[in-house]
Image (cartoon, rainbow, N blue to C red; front, top):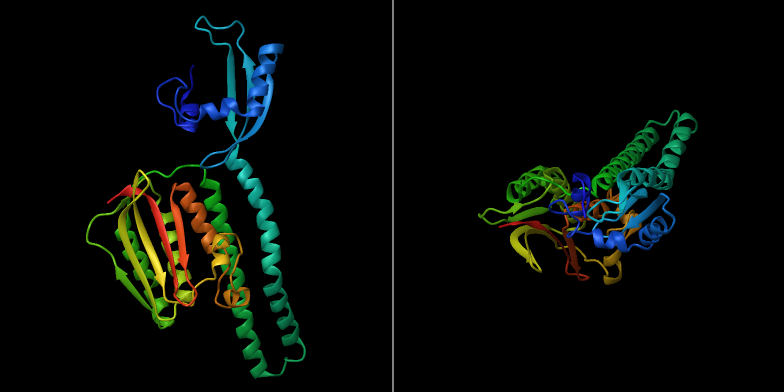
Length: 321
């Protein structure tokens, strides 16, 4: 019958009442329905802890209370909820960070420790061995730094995933800026970055500019690692069903991805070729970060690839073109 401002924001309601939004799924949830029945039967407060599915899963806790006395307009119950999604996501991230970091960091850390022991012992007076071992230690240290940066980046994205972005982003300006920033890396790897961007205006909205820039950067970096000679970046206005939006596509001419691997590419630490991926600086987190950012934007990532034909990563987000 009524909802305060926080409830209207949480459930996408308009006006004061509960006629619209996702409230129906809340009231039909087995845990909530049982609590409502108990309060009506026993007239005592009932605690609730539930997970509400949707575009973004929400963790909610609270109480159902009986109005004493009931209101003249028929109101009998009050549901007080606290959105614990962010707090519980942080708790899960702490556990995930310790588990994943300890597993992924173990090998490079053991390598660095082993070379330190060698430099202190057998290679103490061997300048050539010292130079070679120090180079390997630098590579392993950089690998650990990239991994920690990506883990922290993924944690930050997951913390804000349940909060829709606000604002508008000039998609073409963003893509030009990210392409310019990546150009030295393409030059160093002797690869070509071809831009085929239109002269029209493409606006992503609602959108977070920093996060969309990270999506573009991760996809360009991924394509650079796998390209044989060229990466192509395109953009366009595009609809997804009845929703208007904008899209950009990163295409490489690499060896392609076996079909059975494609559904798992956005999993944390998943690598098609584990040894080659680590050697090229792939932490296995870039596409996981992309997936979580697009979930927050209510967007979509589509991956197409054929062995020997390269790969295509297409991002769609709400907006206007």
